[in-house]
Length: 303
Image 1: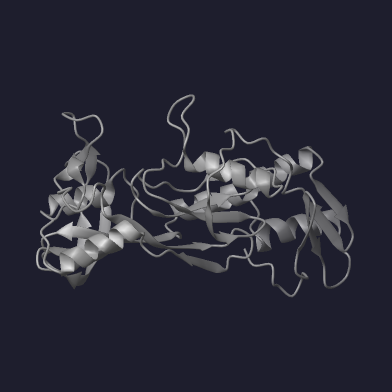
Image 2 (image 1 turned 120 degrees about the vertical axis):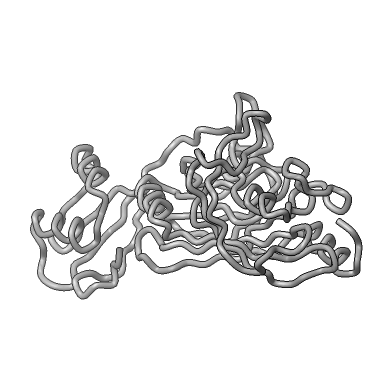
């Protein structure tokens, strides 16, 4: 979606409403609908629902869309110091620390990123539902993207399906990947012998991971990875299947001598802005335990 057209002025948020203003002559209802659906590619189902509930106002040169209604969060806020990497009226990207699940797994589950985001919304006066666009494993660190309204959720979900959201990871793996750069294209399915584990399986779901060696250590390697699909534990399974399990990843054969969790960090997240279509990139430095582990590996420590 590109609002910087010859037809429109920059949009303005007015409370619950987003206001579009024509640069030229006033537009009638049919012309505004055509502009929304054909030029701005506004989601048709959402537009129909807004029209039926009074969420669209046509005022000649102005059109108002009720894109920011007040909503009740599904989870109770729980104060946690939160690192915000990007924020505007449509989306929020925050840094997830190690040991924090993205969302509650059962009633009464606390200490999750969803509850931290809910608290952040509460303390900043934002009345939004919690809508995560993607997930990270509990012990994986890095950016997590949230949509602040239904419109952004629909658009960003579509971007995920269309692989328009790029996620780049850093990992410390045992040994040296061979070849040092390539793509792992191996389907992943459930491991019937272990309820929490996945494995490469001919009958599994398609899974593709691109990897590139960044720097070798005596008995380990710093690797950059990008996901082309998003299977559970995908990077961990693919690296283990190559004979290079992640340092600290006991579930998939990694040693925990230097690190008590898998050495996996989301280094960057790039996504199209849900309204403007502009490419937004957020980056996050690896946490201290990841950096310290790498220094020890470079000095010759065994994983």
